[in-house]
Amino acid sequence: MFFLTYLRRELRRRMRQAIFIALGLAIGIGLVITVMGASSGVRAAQAKVLQALYGIGTDVTVTTKPKAPSGRPATGGQNVAGPGPGGGHATVCLNGKCYTSGTIDTLAGGDQGTLSAATAAEIARLHDVSAAAGGLLLTDNRIVLPTSSSSPLQPPTSVSVDGTDISHPHLGPLSNGKLTNGRAFTAADANADVAVVDANYATANKLKVGSTVTLAKTKFTVIGIVTQPQASSPPEVYIPLARAQALATDPGTGNSINVQHETPIYRLAGVSKIYRKGGREIPAVRDLDLEIRAGEWLAVQGKTGHGKTTLLQILGGLDRPTRGRVEFGGQDLATANEARVRKVRASSFGFIFQTFNLVPTLSAQENVEAALIPLGVHLAQRRARVAAALDSVGLGDRAQHLPGELSGGQ
Image (cartoon, rainbow, N blue to C red; front, top):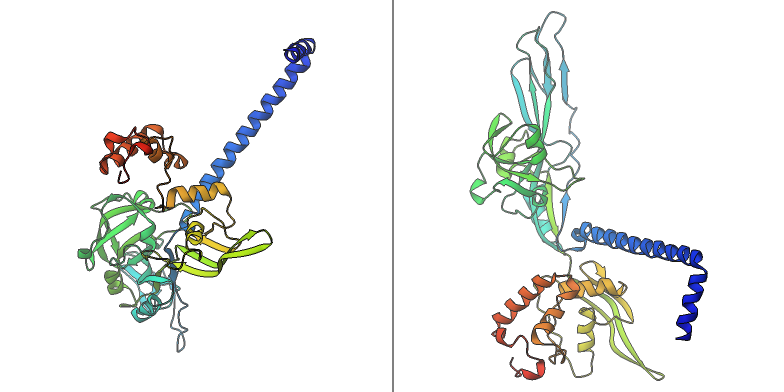
């Protein structure tokens, strides 16, 4: 009471100073909250952007340089000239052939060399590769020549085209796209004149599902429109690989191989866990190297007291090794901060303990709900998911019972 009286009188006596101090504290607290909120938002955005890099199945495209011509090169490239001195037509030379009239429309392979199906099969057999498929990156060059010497020469146009192996829909540039209209390729489209187009290209050329695009003098019907991630340079048109190979200036070949790199879910390197008791060191796990891949089942077997539980706790982010790396999805759980490990543990791991590990003072509903709180699930959604989970195992009518009020089976 004495202290409160003294404090009240001092504040009253120094009201101006107290107001300034209070304002300063309020501004300081507000700035701290703002900075913490912004930092949290940046971390969340960064994690979202880098998620693809941390995940499983990173796509890689393999290309090669073209072979040097064996003899003296023919008149190459595109040579476009206006009407000659005698009033002749414009002449265009393309791939060693010259034209003076009509429309030139070709699918050319550009700067990539050819890659065979055998090379794709060889890459698919490599370690850490889960799948490989050929592709064909092309450019459709279209030039309309004037009908008379007095007609102006129209500028040439080009469209980037990807010959897609539709039997591997998760490989290649198209796998990154999001279908916004129409449909994707199916197995029945392997030899059909159908195309999926990029949304920006569709908008610029006023295309929609059902429209047609002309490539190498062949009309393709648009069956779908896709959007691609920003800051990428996707092809403008996607057509089945077989049709691209048939229409290309070098038919029947491929010039790219799309590879799916299978990263292990877990990669442990030199992991050791040492407990210290008094002056003694007791190793539970010693210099362990281990890789676990998607779809694998792993059983840890051994004598009692030989580190099985310790290893499972390290894999589950419940314990940290004394030394070594514990990579999960490209992140080292051994060095990550506790907040990051807690988030990974809550969203990626499931645990079946040797004992029930239920909080005795919480009801069945609250015990189940506790696992959803670190994920930031809204209260109403949490309650709905918990109710559905308990109903699915026949415990809907026991939601408010404490663990001590449930049977062992329940």
